[in-house]
Length: 353
Image 1 (tube, rainbow, N blue to C red):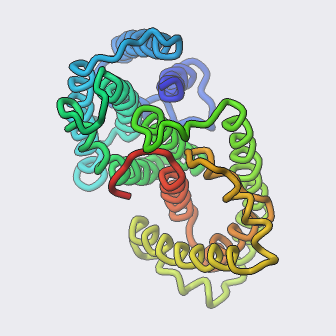
Image 2: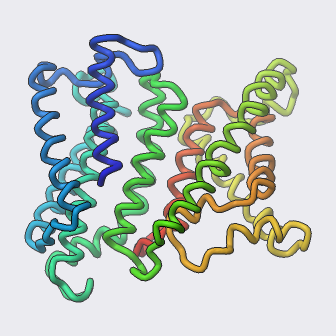
């Protein structure tokens, strides 16, 4: 909840920055609101939301938040209606009315979904721990059971669509990639805390700190370093060479179709690389780092040996760079891969995905 609150705070502060002292790295001021409310009114509403959400987070972190099944049921019902409205808004803005002031407002819609994620985690806490000894006891558990089957596809598709909408709004590849990944990751971690598959698998602070180090150094910074060396320089060089192989990729397809095609190919490559990493003695010592943990939780996704991670990058990224896959397709794939990976390694009791 704290992470989602900070992300919503970023949205409020970013628009203020673009009003007072605009910077090139952020989308322009008008992109942060639909115009349905005057900006002074909008800021007032946002401050009230932030104050209320901060109070909820404080009571949660201090251990004084008392779970209530009725409140949990109410929050989850409101949240799914809220998500449905915002999802329809995104789809209409993407396919039918991209220039409409409300439907076509991509950034506001995405941050509405951020706040909806906050409500989801808050509601799941109350529904799961509201005096019920078992998740099979009934009551608000019907809603929780619904979440078990819908969390994975809804969160994954929302993040990918959000990425494409941000790219369409020219928010920049970095922002369009890492905002959906951050939101998806925070939602998965929130589900892990409130709807765990095995509560005893929750990591200690020491384990979380160790795995966070792997995530930052190996899962984020290493691919970034390789990306600078490969994606920037080699991509430009290959594009300039006009190799015949660069024309094999269907660049005229829609971005979503290209992303699906890339997912299918990369999944096949990753399958064989993963299999060889288990079967070949010279590869197993590097890959064994990923399987060293005794418990499964979200941060396990980043536990890789640098050699193992570099092999993954070379095998599943380099071929597509040579083929000349565009940045927006690579960005959408990274969002899918990251959010899907966090779900795969999470301790969330999901039944679909």
